[in-house]
Image 1 (cartoon, helix red, strand yellow):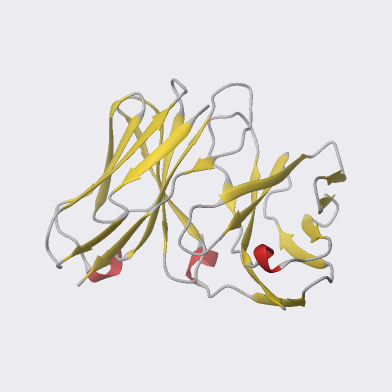
Image 2 (image 1 turned 30 degrees about the horizontal axis):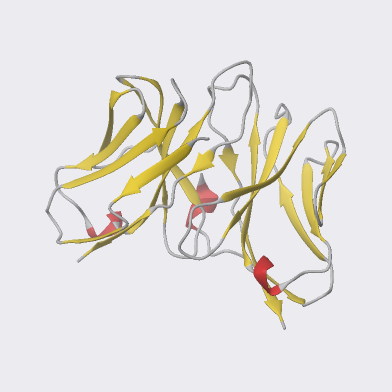
Length: 113
Length: 114
């Protein structure tokens, strides 16, 4: 998509504060959403997922919120740590398991010690 | 458990030279396979995906091609590299089924075309 050519937006957060990373998804028919974390020089790693029949899901220090009305997804990280510094991507999918995920443009999270 | 391998990890190639990047998955069978490219500081661009041996879907027209000669092997190739082919190439796999399912990414190959 067009967003792959854009420089990533950056979010700077003080260590210990909560982080909120936002994502606007494109397809109102999407029914599955994932957040990935990508550290420098590595492949993206799964953080948490949520299906469209839910509006909130919690993991360890992370919470994903889904607002289908405005097609918005957010990732909340509690007590942000230096190891959380990375690029975070949201991804959406609809239909069967054979269709690729559609990735958002990503947000770079920078944790200030 | 499942693992995904990519090699080489880094590659420096001159403009006009051929390319072959390999991806293999272990611990699962009949996966969906994907190739992505990521320019420095940018997002993920889906290049190709495959739902089975010999079945390749191309997402972006360019001088790259993909092949799946075996169930768990996915190869990205080019006959003549361009400067714009530089980037971080990621392979991923996902399960089949009623889905959808998460995609698992490999460690990536850093390609620099000089």
